[in-house]
Amino acid sequence: MEARSVTRCRIWLLSWSLSLCLAWPGMGGAEELAGPQQVVRETSDNMKALLQTDRERLRRDPAYVMAKADEVLGPRVDFSRVSSLVLGRYWRSATPAQREAFSQQFKRLLVRTYATAFLDFKTWELRFLPLHLEGGATEAVVRTEVIQPAGPPISVVYRLRRDDQGWKAYDVVIEGVSLVTNFRSSFAREVRRHGMDGLIQRIAELNDKREQATEGRQAGASPPPSS
Image (cartoon, rainbow, N blue to C red; front, side, top):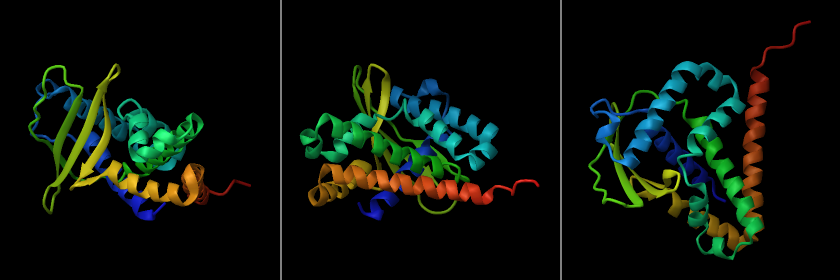
């Protein structure tokens, strides 16, 4: 699996986190937004409150960051659909055990990347673009622009689907680059080379390596024990 895919994953998650953490001041209340947009706005409120009250703990406690990232993303991202889409035809030929193992490791990858990224935000603004949503629709495309202090706006488009639990995101397109499409091509190459089990093992090894690096940094930052 190429490092470029992980980099694009980080870019996607930064933009996703940004959209959840920073609501645009020019927008009105949540009642003015359609259901899919409200998911973004409501999560924004939750994340801003978390950052205001627990920022220092989030910086020093990787396990707490992971738990909170999972808590925020879990109800709002359709990880099962993301997993099936990024694998494409290989999802259909995978065994139930392989599907479960891949979904767990891919979610672990996304959540950990998100967890280490969302503390880095400075000054940004988010603008919701108009959304036309038919009554009873179960699919939505939410278009936004991330406004930077310097530089042009960044186009971020979210694709969501509504199920019995509400609206959930399953793809994000940043400046024309789709999370699903990007990972699909990378994962397909890995499956062709090493098979489905090889792909799962590769992602698991990457996750383990990143966790060990985090634990090493945490241990290095700990004060020496008192004598």
